[in-house]
Length: 195
Ligand SMILES: Nc1ncnc2c1ncn2[C@@H]1O[C@H](COP(=O)(O)OP(=O)(O)OP(=O)(O)O)[C@@H](O)[C@H]1O
Ligand SMILES: [Mg+2]
Image (cartoon, rainbow, N blue to C red; front, side, top):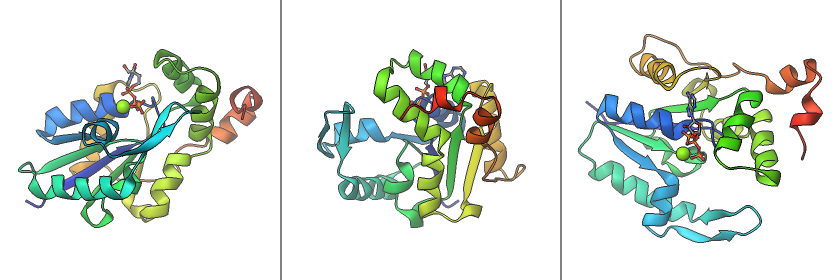
């Protein structure tokens, strides 16, 4: 069986790691968390002091991931990170999942993650403006990307949906959410889009 390389991307705090962990155990997969990998393998170019995040050496990371996929003895590799679409070699990728969450719910998740102030507003804006989806679509064809609205879903429900797509019983699609339109129609867009 050819190896499946499954990307799980989405805005910070959307629930990638929680879902990817469960998926990893169900598929007996190799799990790769990009933030952990960057720190462990010293793939860091510097620090974005303003945002409190690391700047990753994407070329070296791509090379490292290529090696990991080649040397892996598992059939499934799950790559978890909001920039997965930019650093996993395209020719090795078999599935791209972009998790989406209603900004109203995501705001609460972000607070739980400890986000506040500018960091919270920037990341919330990324979700509202489809940044991770656009990043995925700048690398992959529309038909190769699977956008999943995980709002209100348990981790198990999210993972079941991913498994259904992987085993072919459910089809993938992009264009499943319109947060901008939703918030605008509810008259709360300005409250959410503060940058
Ligand atoms: N389906 C869910 N229902 C309720 N809470 C959830 C669900 N999925 C994740 N959470 C919670 O939301 C928070 C963020 O989840 P998680 O760490 O998986 O997000 P992430 O996308 O990996 O974030 P990051 O990009 O910062 O790594 C955690 O506190 C987690 O416990
Ligand atoms: Mg995570």
